[in-house]
Image (tube, rainbow over all chains, first blue to last red; front, side, top):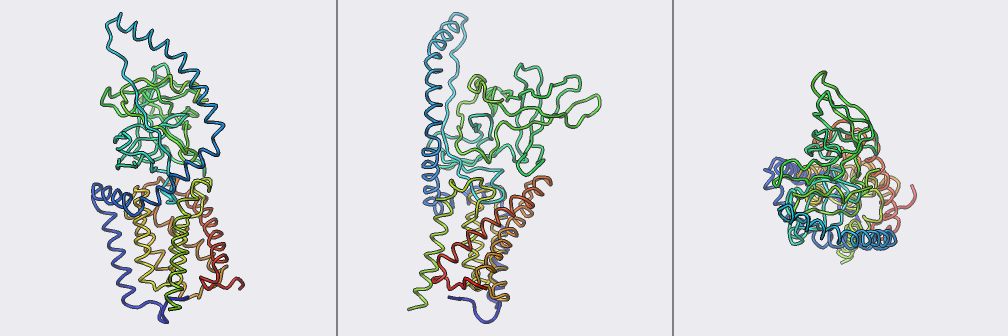
Length: 282
Length: 165
């Protein structure tokens, strides 16, 4: 079957093409609020059944492919949890003796990453959890090995996460002992599969050995985005040096977004979660 | 009546591609190289439609893609509109009712779509852009072309394709 007429392109075709181009430019230049509202509306209506199918496929894949891995992980977490109960009681008792308030609890929401086909999919990720699950904007998104990104916008059932590969991504970082602080930002690509970060603004007199693991610093207090102690990556090289002022270090990320299928969205972020990632960054 | 039946068949193939795009995505490995069945559906439609219809279809598909990855909303709509229009126009010029030629169409269409999305979106630094356009986009274009050839062969009676040159 061929719908095309004898003539290649009529005036009507040209007009339709031009109108679509103008509408596309209009969408591109629209304010972010309008763009987000349009994206959310389309996602909630036309795309909803398709995304539901993808979500179910993700669950089937995870349950089939990672069953043994998940069971092993669950058992090890269970053992750790049993040991933690006593520690928590002891911690509460000591806090009471010292007159400190109770430790804040960290909440979390599990979500599947619904990878898409757009070439820009490595910068943003659609998550299968939304406001109905407790996800809020600016909530950190982590995987088993460390930081993945931050929630940018939230719909009722799904949310969009800005990944660390996005040019706008920034996070305050530190070394494990808290002696060196800086800002981590994406550095670019040094190969088809090698996206790197950089630790900026480290004072010139402070030298960080290669192989040092960099964590979120938690700076910003209760209004900060990232809790303290989430692994970001490992320093692999010294980048730029501004003589006498500061150094920039090249960081290999702990998590590559393309390899992530399942993430955790942290809610209630003003806590130190360093111990949750012990042994995650090798 | 026969024309209507054929339209329903083409519509069924396009809907099947759209559903498979989402259902099979988790099983296709690295998403950067996985075939884009939504784009394939657009191209299958475009090579048997008028350029204007293909442009409108491209705009709609592009909006859906933008909603799925709202990094640069509108860039996908623009890219798919251009690719849809060019594919329909190119089909009229080159007569692409052949599986091999159509697969070539799918490869070029997928790569041009990626170029347009990334250039109009302007959200990648130069090094990442180069790797994307020289490694991942061609890989995705290749897998999309292979998937397209398989679809055309599987539904060649419905889509009226010739399997040999």
